[in-house]
Image (cartoon, rainbow, N blue to C red):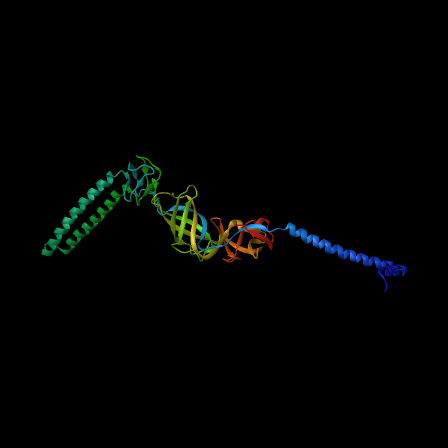
Length: 359
């Protein structure tokens, strides 16, 4: 048998030195790869320790679904106080900004002429009534003809009509509040001559308001009458609850919004007409909703995700999110109630990385 030394000598002597060199190079390459791979694996193992994290299971509960908007307040009843007849302003019975009741006298126009006309009309009506009653008796006894009785009857009816007209004209000299509310500023003063329809002041019912706002058409099938609406002032901390009283039968073609009204019982006078308010309307109920802390959500250009724990490793899962509620986020897809969600330490995590759970 040939020894290794002999074999080498033969190779060299047979001019196959290049084959020997190739074999040596191949052996050296294999040894280098094995040693380098083992060192790299050891180094990675040293550089990738288990990351400490904190976990929390999703919260499951039923939540009220809401829609938000900005609205403005309008008085249910608001009017301009105007005279029905012309005349001079004789008296003013209120101060600007004063609260009045329905039927309160606000202005008195000069009424002497109307009072005289009323007295004359009443006297004429009384006399014609006496004549009518007397002729009625005479007719029954045959003392007068039917034509004379009919003439007395017509005269009495005409005088009664004239009396009613005189009473109306006299009554219109007093201008009264058509409903309870708050009066605005005065546009005239005592002694001014006013014509029918002239603006004397304004009257607003501040106790009964409505809020008008618009919601996107996506809520069309969820908006119902009598749903609760929470109203908050944009200028102070005043809040009040109302109920939906009107839903537009048509969608605005330009904005694709639906007009909605809600009535407010403003007995405490917390709000004023014309004020802008924030609207939160309850439009439904989310049953068995999953919520996770906001800090567990990871945002990227591809959407949202969270890390959950599987076999002591952090596994990244894609989720779909909903509303943010008191530091939590609604998860509509991607998680189960039994999942353990990483809520702290996830910033340094990679998918399938080993973790340790801190308590």
